[in-house]
Structures are given as C-alpha cells and as structure tokens.
Length: 396
Image (cartoon, rainbow, N blue to C red):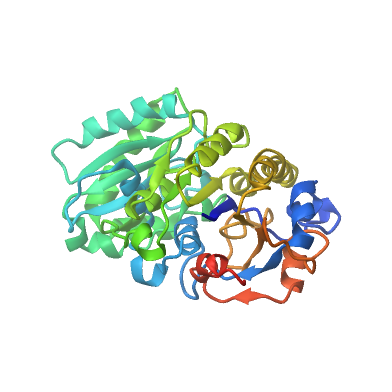
C-alpha cells in the first residue's frame, strides 16, 4: 500500500535579506536533496492561513493536516492541552502560558524574550510547580509543558469575559511595549492579579531568565474528527512540540515520542526519522515536524535559520528519501507558514511545497526548491486543508 510522508520545516520560508545577498534563508541554504527532488516533483504554493485568521502554527498545521481551522480551531492552548491528555470540562478555558522575560509588568514594560532564553524543561519544571502551588484554591491551574511552553487552565473560564481577551502572542511583540495587552488583562482583574503575584515570585528567582507568565491563545477544549475516518489512513505525528502532538492526539493519530527531540537546532533528527520509518512499516501516513527554522526566525538569526534548513535537508529529507526510494511512496516537503527573519514572527504568505512520487517522478519541476520557484510553478491551492487530499490523488 502506498505511504505518504509530510516533512514540515516550521517557518522555513521567509523574505529576501540584504545580509544574504537579497536571498531568503531557504534560497541561501545548501539543500542538495530538495534540489534533487524539485525537478521530479509537483511544486506550488498553498495558503495554509485562511483570510482573517492569525498566522500561527496552530492554524497552519491544522490546515496541513487536512482540517479547516475556521471550523475546528478554538485556540492555541486547547491544542496543547490535547497533547497532554488533560481532562477538561466543555466550559473550561485553556490558555497557552509562556514563561517570558519582561522589563517589567507595567504599562511601560517591554517584551524582551518570549522564551526566557529558551529555558530548558528541567529549569522550568520547578518554577511551574511553584506557580501551581501558589494558585491552589483559585480559578487558575498552571500545567507544566516543555521548555517555555506551558498551559493555564481556567475552570469555567469559557463562561466569563476572559474568553474574549485579545492578547497578542509574545513572539509577535519582541522588543515592543506591552501596554495594550495589560489593558486587556486588566479587563479581567483576576487574571492580572494572578500575573502580578507570579511576576513577583519569578522576578525574585535567580535560576532562570523568566520574569513573568504570559497567558494567550485561550479557547474551549479541542475536538477533531478522526483522521482515520476522514482520510482512510492510519496516521502518526512526530514532533518536539505539544502543538503538533495535540493536533495528532485530537485527531486520533499515533503520537510518536522521540527522546532528545527538543524543538531547537540540536534536536534528535535521526530519532525522528527512525520513528517515522518504523511507523510506516504498518501505518500509512506520517507528519514529521521540525521546529528549528521557526525558532531561528524568531531569534532574527538569518545564518542560524539557513543552517537549520540545511540540517533539515541533510538529516530529515535525505534519509527519508533514501529509505523510501524503492517503495510506493509520496514525499511532501513544505512549511506551515513564513517566519521572516526581518519580522521575527509569522506572516500569512502562501507557503511553498513539493510533492514527489517515488513510482511516478515528474520531469517538469523547477531546477531548485524555494519560495520563488514554487511560485513560478503556477500551482496555487487557496485552501491549506486541500493539500493533503491533493497529495492523495494518484494523478496529482
């Protein structure tokens, strides 16, 4: 039976940079495997972020997995809660809770770092545990995640005005003033008071760069139609981040855990490939996600992002291609959204993709794979959720 693999380099696409000679990080990167596949592939652009929705990884990855975010998306927090298998009431409100570094929690405060210096899980765990103890008896329940990515469960919060708070993602406001967000928090005083108490504790701590929590992306618990029923495939996801794991778990897919997978440039690439290939011995579809290019884009580091793309090509795409070259397989390479280095956050640009079929390679694809050649190929999918079905059509 044919196998399908989505290889997703989060935030890989971007905009031209003077520091790279007018090239994007993808164009500047050495990607021999992608450039080998491009002439033999169907290439194009895909609009993963529906018009009017924020260009977040939650929206974009949901699209790539074949689900319409306009129908199913409730928020970033609920997706990551699904990854942890939290028991939730339909009226609970689930927030994504970053550990961040602020100059101060005040109107003239600035968001210095959305990740507290990419705090590691071992350092973050006791901090979140202490916050949970501080919250006992109140409406908020901090839940430990990984690194800087955690959750805040507000019991019954969907029935309160907190559900409507418009809080910007912290990675969207690096080096920016936080006054408008504090005004929004202040409209639900219980939240602002909780933030102030946690800020006092974290600021007094010296074990990390974290000075505050930042709750955002709130919503009711997530439910998705089963992936197997929807597409007739047994599928799995491989990722270091709870966002993708949560989408997979909510869709009834297997979630493949990989030791050493950390969402950064030094992730366990080989472990991800091994997990994907082992699953394909009995499964039909794998969604293999690599976070590193996105993190480098948020850091504003063009060279590091270029290197992350090169590692994706060398240690993900190349071994997957080698392992499946003589199988009946479809290999899809894409990203969820743009993360331009100059913006240090996501944009809603349509993303490049290639679709390579091992048994029926094409001869009319572009010479290399990047944002411009994908656009020049002339294929445009206006709905991101259509890419998976497009790839499952034999003649596409």
